Length: 149
Image (tube, rainbow, N blue to C red; front, side, top):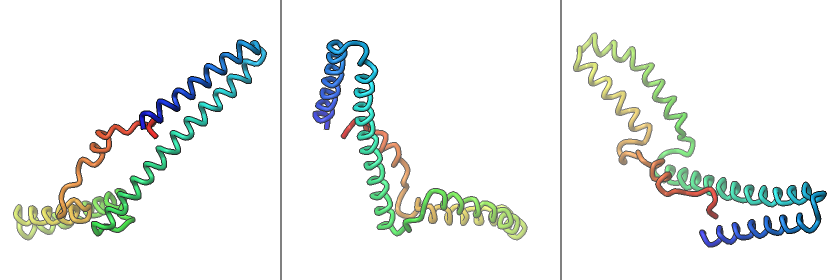
């Protein structure tokens, strides 16, 4: 990948050199057209880099969705759904806590909250198949560059 990037950078440098040489030969009256032409080439290069980056991210998302589906989580199981489930369970935790305290004091409260935590952990996919913490940090460690092909 690096060799390809160096070749593209060399092409862009050649284009800049050619633009500057043409400016010297043609004079300042063509400067605007030459600069516009060079900037169009830079725009094309940036567009191709962005397109590759978007395609890579989409492919990673599709792989993650497929992996989650194989683990038994439905495809629509997004962060928003898990967050919504957690909020609803916390709202319902208020009356559950009151009932537990009235009927069994502190042990009842601990059992009620243990159940709430367990239900949220199972729904979020954190338990029982292991913690899924660190996926983003692994992606950052890979050091994907926007300029790689």
